[in-house]
Figure 1 (cartoon, rainbow over the protein chains, first blue to last red):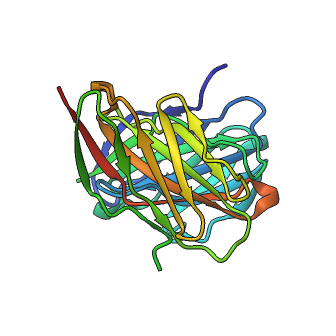
Figure 2: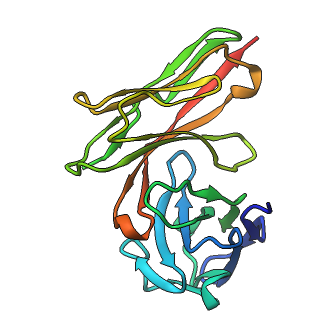
Length: 114
Length: 117
């Protein structure tokens, strides 16, 4: 079975520019998560989708971050405009959706904001 | 308030020896799940082991076991017979609700394990 796919793997941008990340979850997984992992810290949830609806976006900086999940499958996370403190690894994860179901993580996108 | 605490920023272990990575958690929920993930330098998060709050026996997966002490709110990971490939960051995480929508993971700060030959 194919895992969670993310692209790009690496991205370098200047502050105030915009950037978008793409995630394709495991087929059939209803729940999709975006996490932000700043260097030296554990991942922090940004947004959680159940199918194409948002379950939790309480920690998403909505003035600059946006995310969507089209047709309940692929998802994109956008940052506009980027700040220096947005430099991090952005991890996408998916699960079948039950409470005890394991979350499978993608390889992540490493963003550097200069 | 921090919900997952990993007090060991870094640990060293000799190859073939066992090592315990500490994790304490804080929750008022009766139903919750505890996870351990491994993150090598390549960056992917690899699921290791899961313990449900109602599970009476400690979880085991190959060389990994979870020492679950509910009253003390601790969920320590034990790696037996360490291998060089075990060198990585290890994260403890707790799943919180909404329970019917997959929940979300709250991660600790991580412990960097180095296995010495």
